[in-house]
Length: 113
Image (tube, rainbow, N blue to C red):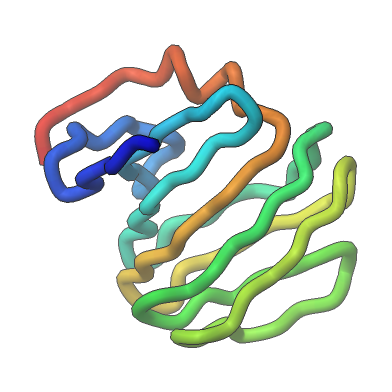
């Protein structure tokens, strides 16, 4: 069993205004992500099943054409290949979980927050 201190992991730059601490196991990717106010994650899809859980802030989330304002305590389940996008209405903290592992996230540029 492992313990991960996400407070000690350097953040990786994901998109403009989107960064976070990311860890990988053999089966999945788990991340604490920050979306700065106004950050936009354009519509995209991927093979990964994804869960996004809002810890802080307000996130406008579009899941397959269904738009919802997500606030703390709300989660979105994104099935494999489902188009989705997001806009941070405030500074937002989320937990993202992907299965299988996001191999592309393993090569993201890291920086100290």
